[in-house]
Image (cartoon, rainbow, N blue to C red; front, side, top):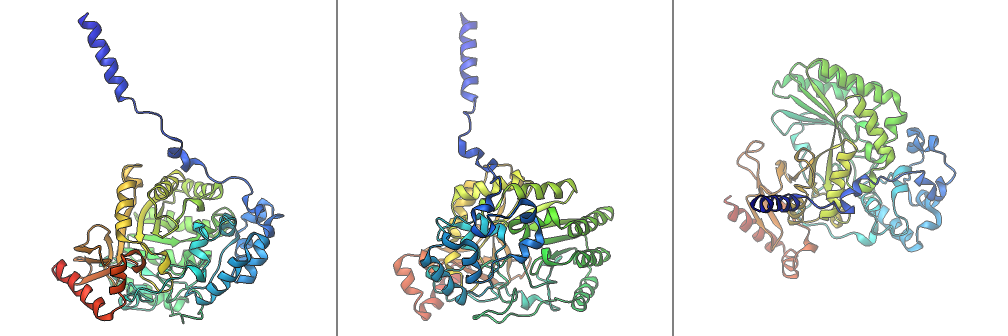
Length: 460
């Protein structure tokens, strides 16, 4: 009888330890968009797969003006939406350039709230007044630039900017002071966009033995021709103390088919990666996907090509209002990235750049989402949530603040290994604060008082 009772107790214990089946949403990351989805767009309805995947066709057919957008989607876009975007184009600090792949992923039955439209197509009705502490170069990259097109902020790392063009122009670009052509609101600064300036950057890196890690961005390394990509990669690998290279590109998010059809570019990247590996140096790709809707069967095929070639890819997202600022959406993004062999590396607080206040959200939002995402998948596939501290403090773990005045939306960070002794302030968007706090931000004297009190509370 005792043996029977022990067996029953053991069975009960085992049954209690059985985890129930996962709910359907736990597997949502597997449901990548399939088929020739682009044919739902009037301009692309007769475009076959081979043509659509061609990266040159994607570039040539990118939408750059309101007229081109209307020609592309035709009656799918409501009239009031078209008028809204015409005004939005005129007020945007960034040029507009949206490839057909990205246009095809927008839900044109609800373009106002679509997360992909939100990132790339400005609407005047959604714009908010800039925060009074915003600036065009909020990270002060030019202040940390010893030569044109090279930012040296962290002791052992530099950012090299060899181009000022991208396959898509993000509304929220932290480099809106320099990327793309001049707009009605911004005259762009210069970057190192020719080989002579590249050499000045290489010479500087060679002169600084502490520089081990170089990020090649821009602009976008997708836009660097194959021969130039290889030249840049080899020039940096030839510098003995350089140990790591990262080629940064938004391209995998917006024209993933380039990996499938631009064989010269992928082969050049592969040769740099393989040469680096033979030298004991790490060369990888950093990409920038913000919405799980951006990842399709085309992304998966492109990533398989890079995976088979041993090219490691990390992702850096930006936390954007209406795009990925809910726990469920961010969890789906993180798991879908891991599913297609992209390592979720960072989630940034939205930088404090001009003209896109409607896209920013609060540090509290980041804290809650990070708490929710952690534990949803493997630790090495869980991104670090960071705030790139305005004024050049660099990336700070979002919850490593010295003080957070939630009432007035002021966050104080320090960066002891980057700029010791300095204090850096990040500000929540004013429209997310209580009415009393919003009123205080309308008074310049109150703005100074609140900032001073926050610094004092932090111990500055």
